[in-house]
Length: 356
Image 1 (cartoon, rainbow, N blue to C red):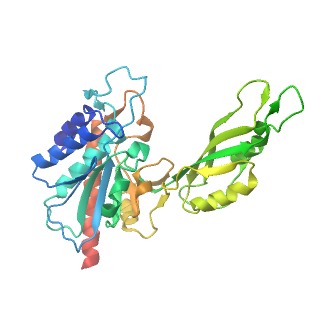
Image 2 (tube, one colour; image 1 turned 90 degrees about the vertical axis):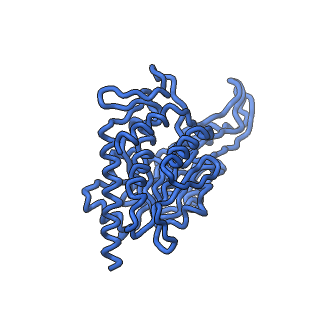
Image 3 (cartoon, rainbow, N blue to C red; image 1 turned 60 degrees about the vertical axis):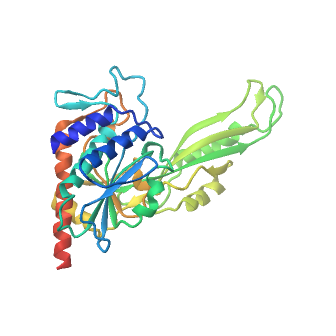
């Protein structure tokens, strides 16, 4: 199986698949399934399939990872679309994020595809637009995914299991003053008015914290005001990146912030929710039995667009994502495949025992 998934990953790397441009790599995945006689369904650039002995009365486990990549940055010294193996590493754009997890999940799906003794169904989904949290990715499959009991989301986590993940709300603020001539005592400088907001976003601490994810984090990331040196600016615009925790709702956070600042806030979206695996979920038992470390993740994935319990786990290392000369170790691919198989096998054993 190792050779099959490595060969597939090399082909995926060699097929540019930037977000919103995944048609060719989606076709590659579909051809791979068709060659093995596995029926699949598709919507836009998303592809999914079920195990051979699917039974509608059984719960379904979603195995999901994404097929899109960011665009290569300017620091690449080699061809980012040329998959090459050197010293046990497979180089290429998307090898680590998240091609490795994608092919390992698919390999695990193939391993169990003809297992007629599964006490659950498996749904493998290779989805688009994860890197931009696009609406034409896994969000467009909600009618499919919401029927699943829970999900394994494939991302580079060093095969540690993220049992919680922060959500994201991006907020735009506008502080309004009054324009005037800088040489005279005119106007009401919007930059000065915005200093209250800058200090608030820097220093304010929300009282509730997550045991797994820690504090809700706010970062003022963009600020802009003024048109020329001798004009007092009448407006100052800024953007705030807010990393959400399950203890707060989106509107609740806005209601806390707004009375304490001068700016008027407008959220860009409230789609990217934080996620948290319930304490008694069977995946906690599986992680403990297999000695898989668990953690809370500050980075975003397709978990934010799922309305079912989920964990994030996969081969590779998050720090390599989006970097020049991105790579994944061949040993990580082997371990990733084995870990996914062990997780599904352990789930199978526990659920059969529960049912008897």
